[in-house]
Length: 292
Image 1 (cartoon, rainbow, N blue to C red):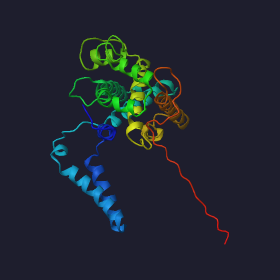
Image 2 (cartoon, rainbow, N blue to C red; image 1 turned 60 degrees about the vertical axis):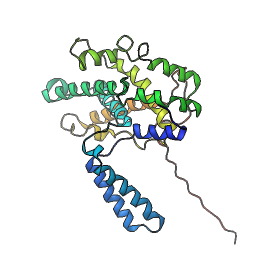
Image 3 (tube, helix red, strand yellow; image 1 turned 30 degrees about the vertical axis):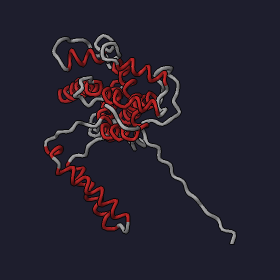
Image 4 (tube, one colour; image 1 turned 30 degrees about the horizontal axis):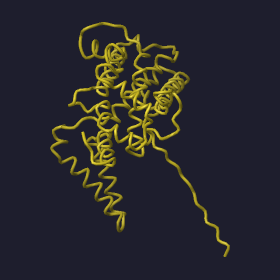
């Protein structure tokens, strides 16, 4: 795909990565914008009117009504990390009760978690031209990322190698995560044993590529991950407070690991001090002193 300039490529990337609001979320947003519109004056009214018009147009569009739009890549990537972080925490935390081995409901939840995680891996790495995957997005915008200096040449080369269709990382022969997804989840071909640590090699690469695109095309995502209390809400009956606290801690440990991967060059494993997928919010107070 050809873009006239970097700004056009960035706009394309933002649309591809951004999450579409549900009807309930859009309705709440319209209500919030309407309240601000009623209080606004002058040019402020135009801003809120524009936000309302955009959402109303979206809800009235055939694209929305027919569901003719993909999930945003941000949503896919964040959900992949969320699922993996929760399962990582449950594996690592020692508890008195073992609901995921003793209760059928939780056993089924864990199986669902496996399917969700590896389905997300497939969506992000798909190479069919029709797919709105992270892999395909990279191939469409990488030249502009390189021209803007948002990715070092050695790392760019390493990413290209990993995303190659036949010889790259995301193939049955080079990724046990992809092999498990293709032969156990997507197709009933094998019954190989699942090793959760093996998918981390793939997540590490994907989160770095995604982070490069997001930091290059936008200001980043504010508070992208759920708090541990929300992620594990409903488990208070099965685990005591000390165990829950440890679950929250271990889950955050994995998320912090992913943030570290997002800020690590793929070609030399060194720390990247530049921007990444999380938005940076800074508050400053300017105090003026008068000598009069």
